[in-house]
Image (cartoon, rainbow, N blue to C red):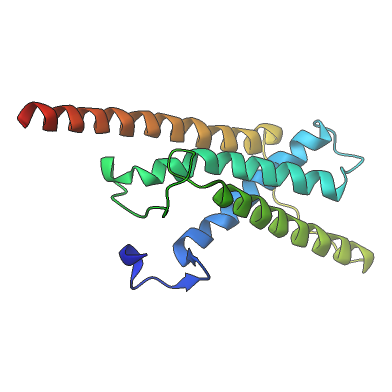
Length: 171
């Protein structure tokens, strides 16, 4: 927490990290809708199914993103934060992933309940533009984030090994 003395905190989470909830929940929700629907437009999958799958996808993305940020000193992020005590998954405690499940699940559930509320009042739901190959956009984004993060983790690990090897040779 000492790295973020001037940062605004929302409970135990820095504000900048909270912003990531918005985009991670959106992409997780979009991918979940596509996966649960099996590519069909109708009938719409149940709310609990979409909430659970979105929470799982968002948490899955964080299982790569969070360990990567913990080794930020080996690439452009710098030394951002640490868990005290370090957790069993590359230094990340499992409670962090539970927090992501609850957070993304809550965000998606609230948004879906707002959709139901709008529909019951006869208010039109806003839909984004129809994109070519739209079914691939959500899955492609989540997969792209995952592949990028795996590549970055690999680069960070190679950098860490080279730095450690260099220190050992110099010492």
